[in-house]
Image 1 (cartoon, helix red, strand yellow):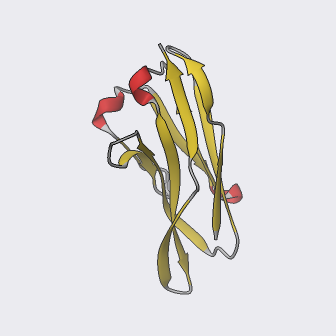
Image 2: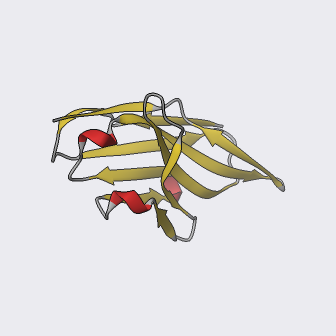
Amino acid sequence: VQLVESGGGLVQAGGSLRLSCAASGVILRIDTMGWYRQAPGQQRELVAAITSGGTTNYADSLEGRFTISRDNAKNTVYLQMNSLKPEDTAVYYCNADVSNWGRRETYWGQGTQVTVSS
């Protein structure tokens, strides 16, 4: 199973970006998909997660600026980021909990850089 992220880049404060993460390979079912981020010198932290049924969970610090969604038919998760702030600068990683024949594993993407200039 591979996860490939896209959509990162450089944006000015107040701007928006939309990240995508597509899972491919042998996949029977994907349970929770999520986005994490890691800033330099910081630990990786959860940004948002979404279950296969659409239940979402967000980091409290986001103040409603980000929205996670997914397309189950495409095994893809999205992160719409609005009103970006310089402190949102980080490498953003997606992950997916994949269940194949009763075995559940978590996979990670390679990360995509998001840089917000002031």
